[in-house]
Amino acid sequence: MSGEAERDVPKQSQAYPNREGLAAEKIAMEERPAPCMHDLPLRQYLDTYVVPSLLPGMNAVAEARPENPVEWLAYYLLKNNTSKKTEEKKAEDPAPES
Image (cartoon, rainbow, N blue to C red; front, side, top):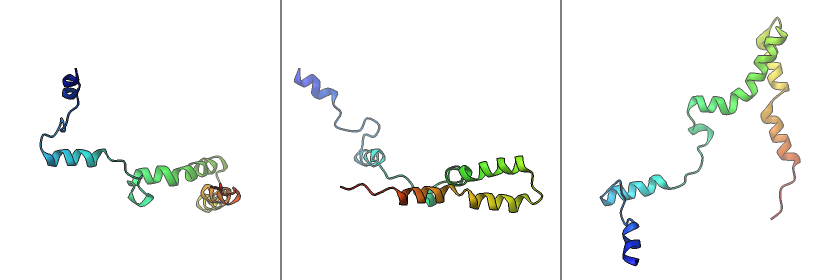
């Protein structure tokens, strides 16, 4: 029975028979840290950091229909800055003690 169990466990990569392929597979399977904002593709960056603030502002402009929509939107974004609220909330929360 022990011979059967040893045959089931591959000692080499099934996809790459040579040593270089095995090393490449090992690197590909390693966990990596999430990319920082400068490493993100443009669409993902906008969806993550810009759209959550801009979309509610655009909806508010559409409802209000002000005479100067760009200035109105600029004021709205400054007044309702979601990243500023997040920073303030982090500052208010006490740091967990180890």
